[in-house]
Amino acid sequence: MKKTILASASPRRKELIASLPIQIVSVIPAESELPYQKRLSPEENVAAISAAKAENVSERAVGIEYDLIIAADTIVVIDDRVLGKPKDGMDAISMLSFLSGRTHQVYTGVTILSDDRKISFAEKTDVTFNPMSGDEILDYVKSGEPMDKAGAYGIQGKAKLFIKEIKGSYENVIGLPVAELYRVLSVEHLI
Image 1 (tube, rainbow, N blue to C red):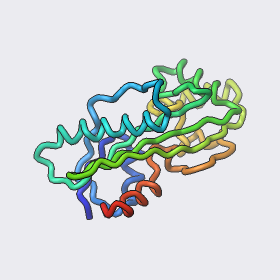
Image 2 (image 1 turned 60 degrees about the vertical axis):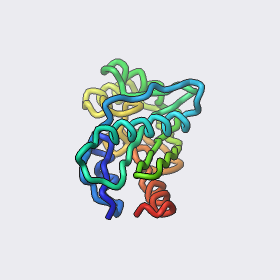
Image 3 (image 1 turned 120 degrees about the vertical axis):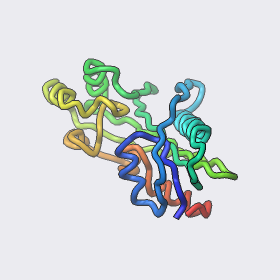
């Protein structure tokens, strides 16, 4: 099995990547992140950001024996507006109110870095929320769950109560499109 560094502090990504036939030897989050660039598409942005994260971690992985670095970045987009992680409770309320009763896109960019290759790709999933009442939004924000998640929600948690429909990869919305990652690793003979 390929010795792999996961370039993410996300416990959700760590859980998802565990299903792949690789061995996680270290978890090293990137120290810096490229800013979102309006001139690029959402797919291009998340791919570029994940590539920069992988490169940042490779520079700092001195003394660690590894074959691969896998990095990812996830954003939520609605009406050409990018929703990152909320700054505070009011920001989370604003984001969830904006998403309520509407369809948005979740993009995750993934980069696989090895000695001789850098492979980046992006996955898109459409997510539709049912309308949410003000009390539902407030109770959800008070739970604390939205605070460290793009778009202010975690589909694998309490937010699943508000999801009407998903078109695409469920795992992509959590933060790592595992099936596509597995396919790319297989096609590129990296596993």
